[in-house]
Image (cartoon, rainbow, N blue to C red; front, side):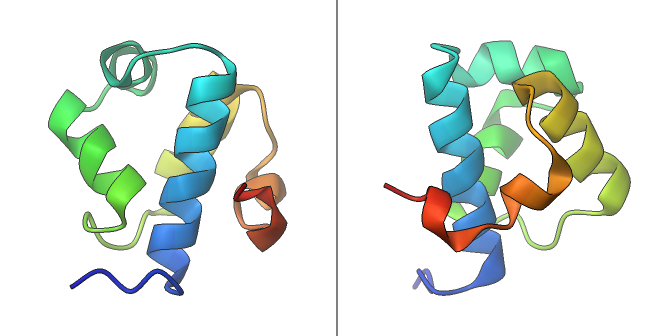
Length: 77
């Protein structure tokens, strides 16, 4: 069961929202951050586990957001 209050889930939903604002598919984001498309799905669902800082930075750069914005709970709509 996914804990929708976990940091991993909140981060994943923020990533998903940012990706969708750019009108990118999971595959496009996967290419931009050099991970498997299935891992994008796992990150977005909060099931991939903790993300290291380097990976977070790669996501933030690809999505044109700062790392600190990725952690804000109020980004989830």
